[in-house]
Image (cartoon, rainbow, N blue to C red; front, side):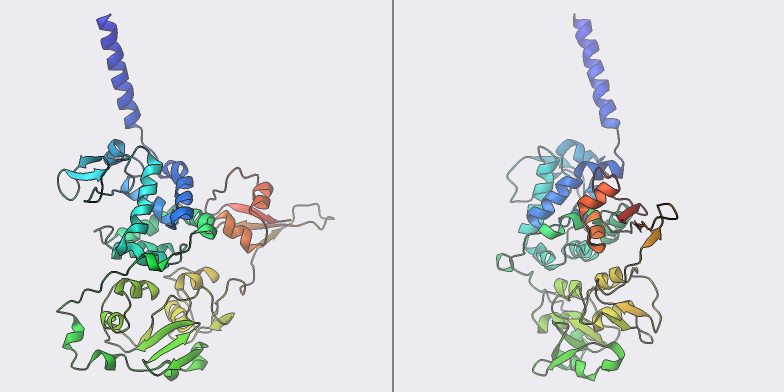
Length: 404
């Protein structure tokens, strides 16, 4: 009897080791937790793509030692305000305390609460929930991780595994950010800040007006407010800052959180401006005032976005470009989603004497079923029916029937 019990114990031990040895692929991890990520986005507003990318990174696609012993998907440490259970794990230091959870959903929920309730993360919820690049950079700026490559890793995961489709699935139901519940992080002044070396006061370095811009060159509309050298482009307040101006000086003068100023202007690092340029003090619009503009000599995509008060990612999306792409003088760039003619591949599915046609669409990076349906003015249910889809998951390059 004792021998049989001993053999059973050995068998169970081997079985446990075998199960623990199984590893998940990134695709399997995503399939397991995407619905929870979308649910949390609709509850708290954290983009599902960001949540899943963080989960992939922090858990090594669901295979980390910390995850196995704590169900902690986001590497959140206990801290002084954590009153529930914790587990000891070596990280930046030996034997650090990490939060433990009953299951994955509890971990995902605490992750959303952690970001939404943390004062230093409050500015993130001013961002467009579908702007995953701004969110990735914002997390690093707020101090979520010490790895300088953290934003790039998140962005790479999102683009490689098309995680943006899950943010798009939940974007319409994101709760409205209530600014009154949160406070901006205080601006910390560096005694060695370059602006102190400038003999002129900060106010003079910010002199200049958008009225000096040639409206024929950029097609933007500006209404000057000479009282504080501010202007409005496409409904957003901005200034025209000179080369050599400190971004910290601008943030301080106009009482804007420095991290927020960087996010609004899609800048990765604080520092000194290397050229004269527009700096926005309020979030830019996703659509321009005009349908399109013509690129001028020496203009970059970033220049066009700033001059027209439009978010860079929106400009890229409308024109099917990437941030590193070249743009040439004379190119027409669309500033609105509805302005660009829909380019669809037409094939004849019926006999030659039949006029019936099927419209096909090839899934692009960061594109989900909801976005495709909206683009072609059809319903998600129609797309699922025409393409025999059991779920809303799409793969980059996948051909979809989008019209009959």
